[in-house]
Image 1 (cartoon, one colour):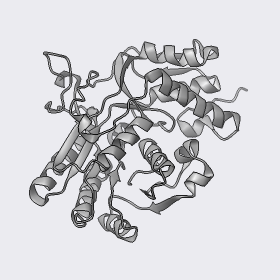
Image 2: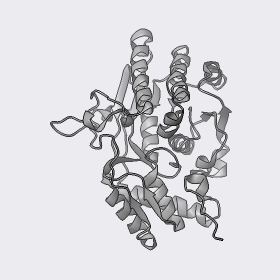
Image 3: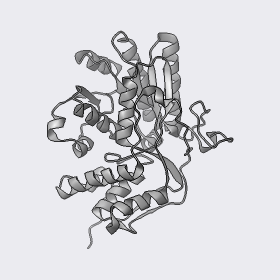
Image 4: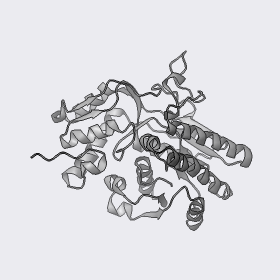
Length: 328
């Protein structure tokens, strides 16, 4: 699994370890803070860690061969703010890196399940939704507003060409606003940071308003695993479902779980520039694709943050919150 130390990666590692499945975590980063947030030391000891860079195609191939990998979930990427700050690096990691993953899998196709990768609803503009029903359908034409969105669109196109030219099967899943422990960076990380802020008793302002489709990180991980086990062929892409909620409802859910945090969480009025009502029809082809009820997922997130914070094992600044200025 590439990008194993990110938010979705950490939850995917956790889910597989709890199933007693051997996991090889391939990542350039060395910080395991997100894994430690949601896994025990005993669970972490069962993970094989490989430090590697997806921009180095040879290192991907070596890792696949050394560990006899049969199922590859590709999550490594630079998110919207980092791609905006350095578009050339973003293209190298997000596009060339993904081509390297596809190329490595193609050369070992005799033993590989379909390559699963994360695309994104972020490749679409809000106006790309169907004017008749207001939904973003899986076959909508994308008009990306960010470099990140362009990269994701390119990855879907490259996946299609790898199927046409080489018979490499791939499955791309398109999440929108992922939330839950470990979601500490990126354009849509605000709801999770708001939950953490409420737990530690700090005010926080989410940087967008309106409504969005929220997807609990554990659900995304289980969907990726289901895709990897599905046996589907072709270059398949699916919109991922979730909970369509307003930022008012996000604040209400946080305050319901943490009444003492009432008034701490606010949000900007401007909505995200992406579609919010998503058509996820067809995703049942993957099998069990869970959607945890929003209030339940917020409650679980609160519990994880509270447990680690009360044990003194969670520094808020390491999980996306700005440092509190010292008073003179």
